[in-house]
Image 1: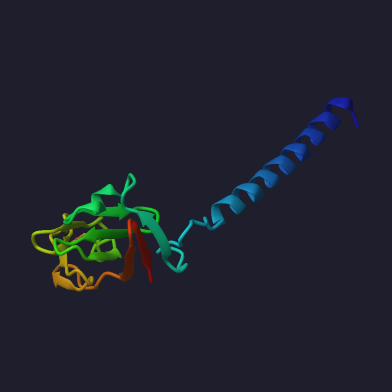
Image 2 (image 1 turned 45 degrees about the vertical axis):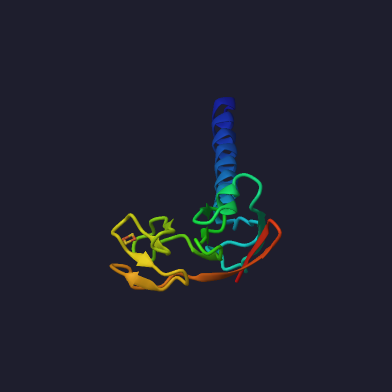
Length: 148
Ligand code: FES
C-alpha cells in the first residue's frame, strides 16, 4: 500500500468515527428532559411553587385586578377585584394562545379567537371547548403559593 492510499483510508475512517460520535452526542441532548423548579405543565411534574408578590416581576399581583403569566409553568395567576388569588393554565385550549385576565369581567380572555374562561377555568364562550386546568392558591403575607 502506498503512503497516499494509507493516509486516504485512515482519514476516511477517522472522519467516520468523528461523525458517528457527534451524531450520538447530538441525539442525546435533543432527547433530554429539562427540569424546572416547581414543575411544568408540559412534563407532568406536580406544580407547587411560591412567589413574592411584593418583588418584581410579580408586583402586578400586589393590587386587585392585576395578573401575571408564569411562562416557566404556563400558569396565569390573577388577583380579582375582590382580592382572591386565582390560577389556571395560561394557554388557551383552542389553539394555544396565551390568555389575559380581564378584572372587570372577572374572567380570562383569549385574544386568538375570543374564547373566555371563568375564574375556575370553565369555558364561558367558545370556540374553545375544553376547560383550563385550575390550580390552588394560598397567600401568607406577600408569599403566594400556587399548587395542584
Ligand atoms: S386560540 Fe384561544 S380562542 Fe382560539
